[in-house]
Length: 245
Image (cartoon, rainbow, N blue to C red; front, side, top):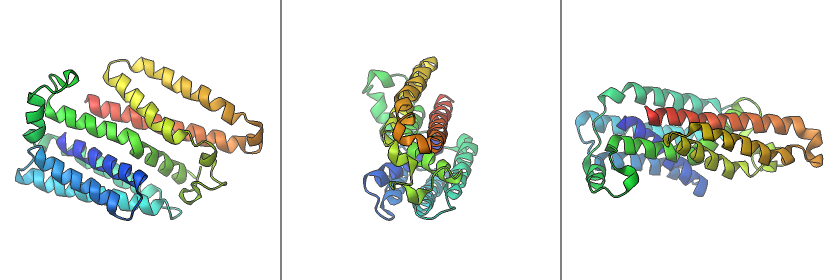
């Protein structure tokens, strides 16, 4: 699963970098560099692994370019979603052929740096790291893309008065927090407790959705909230399935 883990890490790093500094080409190049450097540092130096690292790096670059264009051009939100789906499918299909993670990460884990990591193999640690990174900015990017693809909100309307998301700004922070909480509870074997997170979010959003100022657009806001929330939860639950595999 090392190739899949590095794909998730590369995409997660690229999206985090874009959220901090949305410069042209820089975020995806950083993500691809992390894939290549991290893979080699983890002992994936065999010919097949190096070739896979180049492909994964290219997939991260493609993801970054498609996302950047989707956020400024109407009608392109589906392209990065399709590219991501194909990349994940290819990484999952190639998982049995991926090399075992060792190298610097394996040596670090051999020293038992944290009690939480005791007994975990390097492949598992790398995969969990990728899953956790995806819960942050990548989860928000996926929500925005799905909202745009379904016509719930257009990418170029982000931050303008016509964007319902501008009226529910807390979701950009609550989304990563709830996804990390859900994944953490799932990895700890307490998935049932994740229902508390879902219920709490509904309670927090209820006053906003019932505000008198928003009555004229309440249906649009409700659709935005429901679609965005379900996509966010699916990202967390899907990542949990991958991390638990």
